[in-house]
Image 1 (cartoon, helix red, strand yellow):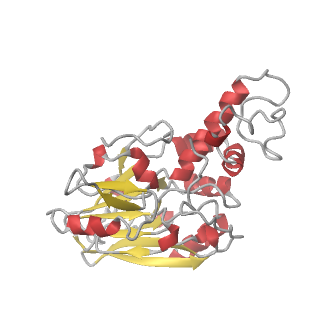
Image 2: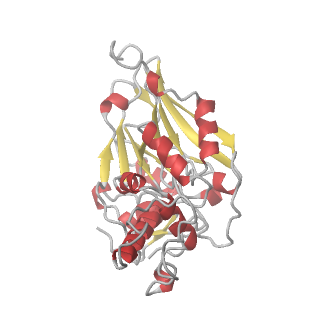
Image 3: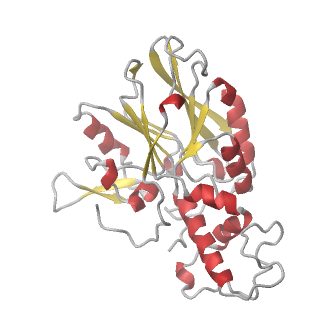
Length: 333
């Protein structure tokens, strides 16, 4: 595995998860008589706590779990937007699949930091260790115990701590269980322009490296690739957008392999919606007042079909930072 990056990755419960076969789009001819006919996969980009926008997009695509539709989120469900708990509640209610993004990782680390602080304090009054605090979430922590940790520049940002405090323990546990990679093996008896396999990951993949050997940090942070001098065919993932997305090299690599894999990802709001032969980038900057995007995948007449659906932001947007890392929590350890 590539060398580790200087950022703390919250403990990984599942690195790669496979979507159950019964959730895959099916042609009406192959659907079970007792099961949902022709359910769709609805894969949505970075929501960032924008619950109203998520509701609007699900309404626009006509999402219906009863008809077999399945929701997949590409990470960064939470943080910065107005209603992170509401987004996680809806994901849980709908039985959604999701992958961990850099903001889930940051919030999980912040929750662990808060818990560790509380564990060092005397147990009294409302100080129970429960992460759910409905009003003024830091009020029950004396002084600057949470705000002033031992190495301030390595602590979670105030925004991320506030998100961690707003989420319940059930929310935190659900986020902690998310895989870094979701693999979707498409039905082999149906023609598909998406290839044989879909991979849902938050930020990206490095070409030619097996899924099991991808660096966890890169999976939730990368935006581009830099060719390494020591290896003519090697690449080093980079967080900065660079001149070109990692998608260009991914497409070129897919042209060389017999079994095609399409990657669906988020994280790169600066480039907005991205579409190439073997990759679809769904972070279209809803957090900043732009669109929330989805790819809807279904089966019809023996063929897998997909289309992009977007809605305008329905929540109060957040002003983007001037940093090239505008989607990252810059205070993650």
